[in-house]
Image (tube, rainbow, N blue to C red; front, side, top):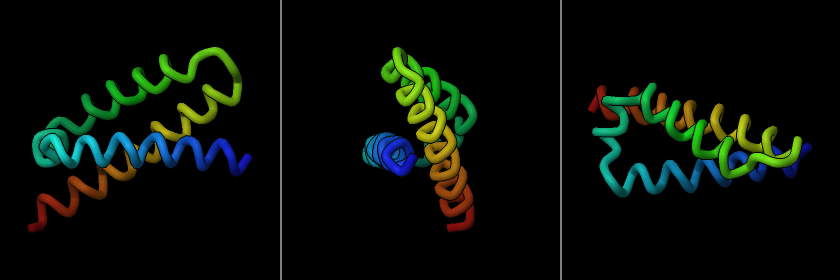
Amino acid sequence: MSELITMGFLSAFGAFILVWKINLKWFCRFHWQTDLAFAALVTYLFFGTFSGMAAAAVAGVMFSGLLFIAKFVTENI
């Protein structure tokens, strides 16, 4: 179980770093579209096993949380 959470967190954190380097404020402006695109991409990449789909679900939730926090922080600066 901890491997799924770790794999999901690493996937979400890696994608968040890429989003941050590209343009975090732009992605925060379109947060639900970014969430949807990331969830679809991760689901496609991890498709094939139950553990892969579980890791994709965890990654989607964690990425959404990271993006929500980033949106909250960037709006209040």
